[in-house]
Amino acid sequence: NVYAQQAENVSSGMVSFSARIHGQSVALSNLAPALRFTLSMTEQLVAHGDAGLISERTCVFWNTTAAEWSQDGLHIVRENLTHLECASSHATSFALRASTATCPFCQSTMPANFLNLSTEITLGGWILLTGLFFACLVGGVVHALDR
Image (cartoon, rainbow, N blue to C red; front, side, top):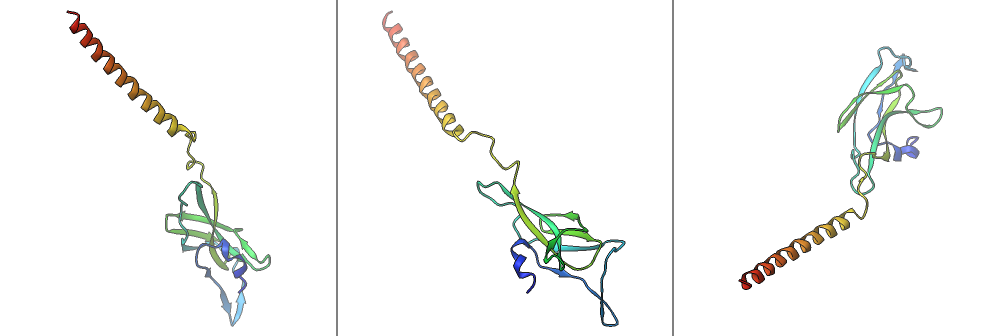
């Protein structure tokens, strides 16, 4: 299987288009309007956890000359959480390629020790308030006894 060596990069089933005239294969290139097709996404959109990774998807075709997946001549028409619609100026074998990238808005901007500092401040505040309460209570009792 010629596609097996690159399978780890592909995150969808493959769709192939071909044409024959009188039994002979015909290359379909420079198509106008562009060939449009929809592929179903099989990867999870966002990887959960501390890594903050997202999966970026692109339309690709199998370039038989280079023996690798390529995105030349392809663009995304529209996408949602489950599907990607692609347009191509040529007809070959297509798939979705997923790659991971750091999610710029997934990383926490809080310092690692923020929770500990916050807890210490809250605990310190309660101790201070409790001390003030007892000081007022004792002061009130002493004042009442002095009368």
